[in-house]
Structure formats: C-alpha cells, structure tokens
Amino acid sequence: MASEIMRPVFAIATNALSDLGLTSDNHWNKIAQLQSGIGFYEDESLSTSPFWGSQISPQAWQIIHEQTKSDQVLLPFEQMCVYSAKEALATLEEEIDFSETVFILSTTKGNIEWLGSIPDEQVFPATSASKISSVLGCHQNYHVVSHACISGVVACLYAQRLLESGRFKHAIVTGADRFSRFVLSGFQSFQAVANEACRPFDAKRSGINLGEAASTIVFSTDNRFDPLARLIAGSTSNDANHISGPSRTGEELALAIQQSLRAAHLDAADIDMISAHGTATLFNDEMEAKAFTLANLNHTPIHSLKGYVGHTLGAAGLIESTLIIEAIKHQQLIASLGYDQHGVSEPLNITKQPERKHITTVLKTASGFGGCNATAIWQKC
Image (tube, rainbow, N blue to C red; front, side, top):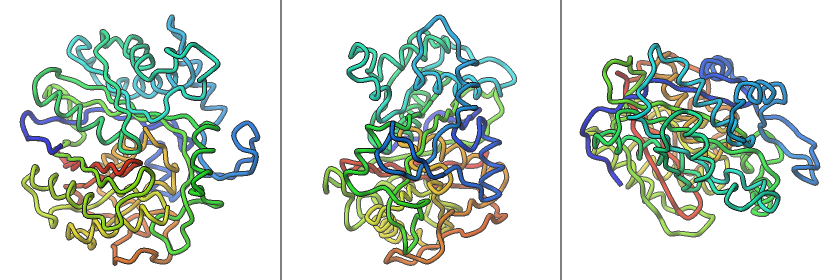
C-alpha cells in the first residue's frame, strides 16, 4: 500500500488526550520531563487482580462530558473523540470548509464495552463515526479504520490518499480506545500484560501496559493554513505469521519501511528519528529490532512512547504521530522511557534522554495482530 506523491498533504492541527493531559502541548511538556501517565490500579470493575496502565482521570472526564454536550446521545467513547477533534480544530486561525472535509475514525474496539447492554447497531464503529461526524459538521462524510494496532497509521495514510486524489481538501482523523475489562482481560489471557511500568526494548521487559487515549490530526492540502508537518509517504505489509504473534524475522516490516522510503525518494540515511511501535512484549520488540537492522536503520535514534501513555490501540498511531510533530517543532529527540539495559538481539540506537537534534524526517512504525505492519514518513515543512 505504498502511496504515490501527488498533492502535498500537511498536518495543520493536532490534539492529544490521555492521562498526560488534554492537549498536545500538555503531552510534549510532560514527555520532555520524562513524566509517565502509567500507574498502578486496583479496580475490580476492570480486573480481578491489580494492574498497571494509563487511564484518563475522573477530573479530565468531567471536562470532556461538559464540553461535549450535544443533541446527539454520545457515549463516553464518542465524547472523547468529539472532544479531541474539537480541541484540534480550535487551534486553527480560521475554520475549514466542512463540505470539503472527511472524518476518519481509527479504533480497535469502539463501544465494545456496551455490547449486550444497548442495541447492537449502537456498538458498531460506523454508528460512532456517523454521530461524531454529524456533531463536527462533516455532512456524513465519514470512514472507519479498524485494523488492529496499526489502525491509526493506516487512517493517516488513508486520509493522505483521499486528499492527494482531490476528493477532499481536509481530513479530520481521530483515533481512540477506552480502557475496558474486555480489552484488558484479552491481553491478560495472552500473558502479555506487564506487572510494572512497561520497558520497551529493555532486557527486563515483560509486556504491555494498556492506555486510554484519543488523538486527532487535521490534514489539509489548502495552503491557506500554516502546516505543522508533511506526511510524505507510507506503506503496509503483512507477515501472515500468527494471529497474535509477529514475524520472527522482521522482513515484512522492513519491506514496508523500504517501500515508504522508495515512495518518498529517500534513503535510510535521510531518517533522523524513528518512533517505533515498541510495545515491550518480547516478540514485538525483537521483530522491530530485526526490521530496523534489515532496513539499515539500527543506528538511527529510536524511541517508543508506550512508557508514557501505554499501548493506546486505535489511538496509538495518532497520538504517536502527534508527538512526532511536536518533536519536529521543538527539534528534540524523545527519550524511550523504561529503557535501561539493551534487551534485543540487534544493536539499536535507543534514545535514553531528551536531546536537541536537527530533525527533518521521521519514520513511524506500527505492528498488530494478524501480522499487519504499517509505516509512515513525516517531514518538517
């Protein structure tokens, strides 16, 4: 799924919503100070045993509820999406033309926590997307991307294609997932949940922390808006290794990286920073390390954001891309929180501390259940 470079597509606004804060600035400021939103929870409504993770605070939820009152009946998942999208749009100096705007929702589970409690059609992600796009004013121009943990990156690439082709001038891409018993119990059944704050790429890593988040990037081809960064290329691949286990060689993710580089007319040496998927599971981090080596990127500064916000599923590709945009803005590498002792078979250049650096081009990677991989390349304007 390598994209052709046609009309330039730019990010013109962002928002990040998690336990770290309600704005992209909140997130950047805390990440620059190595502050994590991951904590220890004892909540029997979510799990019979204590767990580590990241949840949006009750105080933040109160603000979200108050700011998303609508004629539409919105469930909490939809409220967090509306809040994030509206906050991103509010940063623009002038309003976009919603008749030329598409809304794209990225989620892995949507309203699944309500399954069996409300009519089935109200649980469908398409129903949520319809309600959210209506509240935003997108005239029912909406799509849903639900592609495991690569959903957010794929949603950005889909927006890029729609805008490059001229079908729309603007795209509002929002990714979100709630912290639910259903999701937590699923990962617990795989024995993939860490009993401490997660440690991507570290020798003592023992699994993921789930995170609750929403994030939005507004894309545009309209040069009236000041661009934050350009999405220049992206690609997907699939390794067909196992429903819940990634490739053991990393070749398929490496292929997606190489396809993105070719589409962008770049070499590996042109990449200044990598935002890895970095879930802190044994198999994912090992696979990524092999892929980066195969793509000649193992010397490039690499980080994972999972140590700050956890694995936010459908929001991951959006919130992590938003923080790429912040890193480009501030010209600063992001430290990979939780990394201390190297724990993968390939040598990687894991960033341990925030560091000033000239950053022009950044690679984002993501991988998910079913063997799916996605990559995107962001560039400074």
